[in-house]
Length: 316
Image (tube, rainbow, N blue to C red; front, side, top):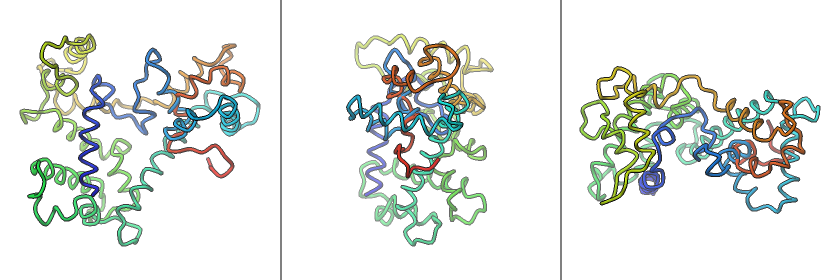
């Protein structure tokens, strides 16, 4: 049952990602990776940015020689002008391609689940019935946390209605993409902010206080010492997040936090990878430089965003 799977994933995600707010809540366009971008903790973010999430897993299982052969094929595709170098522009373009590919493949996967009548569109009833199934007939009486399921249904319907621009409650592919990836669409940003506030605002006053902000990231066990990053986050809340200094985050301040404007994360990742692997500091990369820094590359989204396969069948 998709409903049980959905709830289980929510619970697991909450348990697994007890991390600083900027890593948990901030919505990046076409996320490069769910991993923290901190080289001190390893290069997995870069690995998934260069390779893509699924291909990154594949690389981890290859022998060194197989990894080099596969990387050479990928670099050949990134080097569009064929001059033997990977420029910043080529790397940036490739990472953006992997982002778009990830979103397309993610939508493809869900489309097959929800377009039950095969008409090339997804009606709200199709989504609702596939996700919540027979529980709807019982009004969730058979589930333990009835209020949570009802809240999830209400939230899904609100997001679906917002994504459905023509108001017919039947999603085209573009509208369904907006439903699944609202951070990619300007007209969905209010929904992203509203959902964030609802998640964190425990006293339901429509704004987020410092305790709710920290509580979303960290709940200490008895006697547990507060980590240093919590102190840093409290400072961030007071000095940066709470722009009007009223002690709360309102919707506009939450938007500034979780939807950070026009930051181009693909561009930043391209610059980061060049900085880390450009041995001769000429501002471009050779295959030799990339192979010499295979650990960094094997931890980037360049090589596998959305299950990328570096062969002649994978079109740019």
